[in-house]
Length: 225
Image (cartoon, rainbow, N blue to C red; front, side, top):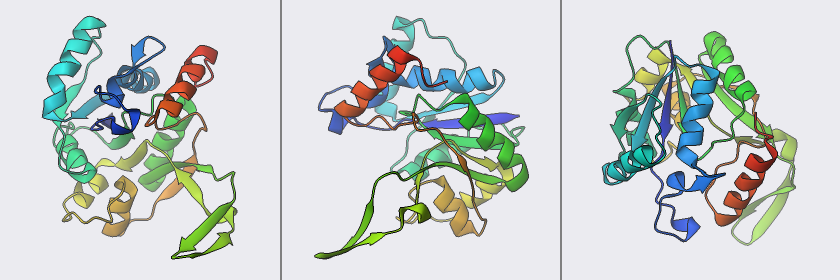
């Protein structure tokens, strides 16, 4: 059984509005609903665990009524940091799950091919992260000095990050540190290597008004499958 923990705890401050970014409509449908739909499109039997701050849950329920959204999901409370939110989500995942993915709620354009690649590789390597190449020149700055670094040695990390269920649960028993920036960093600290698979360029994280403009274009041109 596959499971996905969708973390949606953003406040949308960089959007400049009062509505959290995960609830903003893209192509006439809230971002978060598009994200959930994408995973159920890949695997209709997948368990979806949605992690939301308690303060946003009533608003989410009202959106579901407004849009007559009835996809199945399990709700978990958001935590102080992403680490704690994912840990709360893990507590809601069925013990029958063999693979658990973790995905950003504001990445609705992850392709089915990316999801498939991550889950299939996780069967073999137990810890998988989708990435895309860096296409711009990269400089490393320390103080007032900077130097160009070889961009071929760097990758941009996406989600879903997918793990063997037992591995992820054990990794999240570690005490929290500020170095845990994503789930792969938690698993690496636990001592397990992470395997990379090719992601998709459209799998953007919608955090700014510019991103929202790009998202509308992606929906209009239907290029995210």
